[in-house]
Length: 583
Image (cartoon, rainbow, N blue to C red; front, side, top):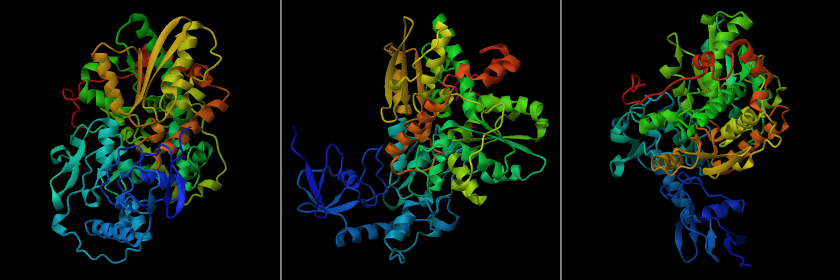
């Protein structure tokens, strides 16, 4: 038995175990100190100096970089620590664009929050000069970068490097001229950014925000000549409630349906339906490749950031990528083709909106490969955050709503479709169907829990399908995906399927989800909400969904049919040689 380890915080003894720094010990004890640069999922940086504490015998220390030691005596709010924090805030505000009322992050800005908490009403330092302001970069289809609101905390730089191994953003210049920017100062839309939005997710101010398209969608809704249909991804239902005071992981799909109708959407469908459709196509495609031995391992293709990464960095690996479109891009063409038939709506009056946890979906819907007849199948993508804003703007009391169902016939889904929102969910859903396709026998235990997890970013799972051994690699973050690619290129890969989600933990932690300063706990709660719904549904296998079966009978013929390939599949190419490199 190991000896108890403890330290003292403001005179109170606090035990600690494996916490990496004083800040985590402080938080575990139910207290806190402010910080801009620290994020639990990223390496400690110690740049902002807001989290300073006073340690007896050690003086002023940054709590995010100092490891806990037995017997330390730590003081959180001494006169010195408060003066340092207030000075830091004044210096940041003096160099900050203080147009808070019109800022995208007003009310959800950590700089604004701490300035209020520390009573900063007068700034002793001169404001930034007008000629020193830099232009706003809105060249990206997914994100907006305002360097005038950057406080140089470096969280975005570390997220890009540590999650995606990509380093699209970095520090440039020195001293008072230091900025965070893409390589060579180029616009964000002209570098190999994958649009994952993790930089915006960790940004404490309005320096990196989601490109807002709510006004465009409001214009469509209020146009009496338009019929606006909407679909919602699995991960949105377990995160939207956070914007209205509900706990992370609470499934709000019924409340979402009710809110969307009150906003004015005409028809409401569920992307979980097309997640089931994706499994029908992808499982069939995988089994065909397994039989032929060609282009293995198969790469999943649901994550648009991952697809773009392959095009940008490893075009030679594109033959491994599944030809299946993502669930969003499968459902939209089905709606375009069948809503006019079922609901007597002229195609030219139909507008398709998707609610996604993902900022990269804004990029995906603009890809020319998924245009048909010169028009995008998905007209607009709104993130979970944007939907929350629309609900608030409409004056809807979200928590007071009565749950409502979505519309038929594209609303019925299985639990396999639901778990798409968590890392490992696509592979688990595919395994449930592939087993029964191969054996013709029911899979009684559908919970493949070894595929699950929001903290372990890479795991290999061996499956036994009646004597056929399969290994599935599940990774989240492109940094882990890169390691898997190198294994393949080195001839060391032992897996036949590779599931990749660019965001750590999967879509539950997408760049468009409500922001959380404790992503580790929040994404786990969101994922648990999806698995809980899966466990309570009568249907838990995609191929058992009767609405999917009917769609094939009446429209798509059979999985991987010629008709299915026309509607549900696509191809990709080397972006640097393709016709759309400047998208």
